[in-house]
Image 1: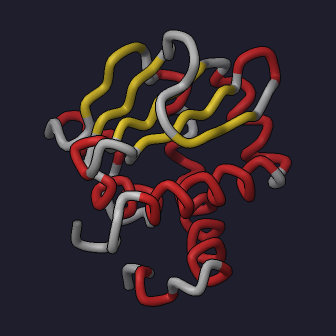
Image 2: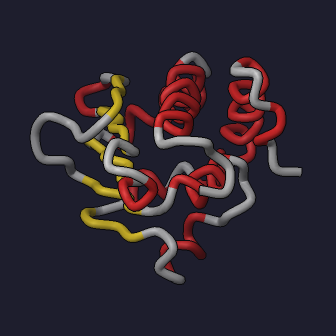
Length: 139
């Protein structure tokens, strides 16, 4: 991995990102409208490198690993490309068309949030700083 020392680091960062995003009213409402159980599968970067987000029924829950139950959407990519995406350095729509991100299920709801990626990236930079990982910030 280019940005991470082990598979636990990206999951820690990405879970913190979703926790922080859930506190933002605009992002929180957008996520709730997705109304899916999403598994972010980064296991090509390590067997324990994945997390899930559950936005069904107005909930905003997340956790490490594979979710209990069948996910509505699986986003498969490397932890490094996920870092680039959350940093707004990898366009998710282009990454999907170029097969850097592989999608199983409907990503339409999630992709509606793509215009909010700059806001998400700003929150992600704060999360990385709070974790003491300024060196992971992509300039």
